[in-house]
Length: 182
Image (cartoon, rainbow, N blue to C red; front, side, top):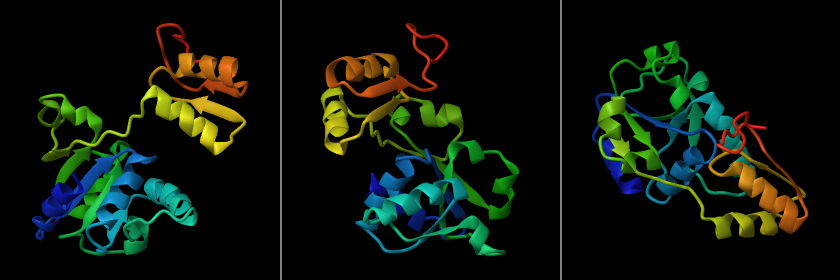
């Protein structure tokens, strides 16, 4: 997947390559994967840079980044820009001139998703963990509190409370068992 992204980016020398992804986790994984193939810096939306800085402080090797705000009046042709999906169609996009868009998500495994959502390219990358991996990660962190936000958040929080004795709750997750997301 990282090789495909690098190839797409390299092929867009006359326009910006805007890669939409989730700002927490997905962007950092993309930057780590790309860092294995190149040291060419890319630009990131400010919402992504905030999280990237935390990863760097923890010693995770990532592709060098600059924020769009720091770029000034720079021309973005030939540049890779990572942005949260919420930036798509916003006034923030006007600064890039001619560009191609892509989306990096596990959702792209579903046939027709890229086309229906109107992206020029799509890159399949899923970072969903299985149940055992999630529980192992919780144990390995040594945390005392777990906030679950996606998938089966309520059952996970209940399991963690009952079997691991930790404080745990579902945050903002809507499930059939918990339609209010509490």
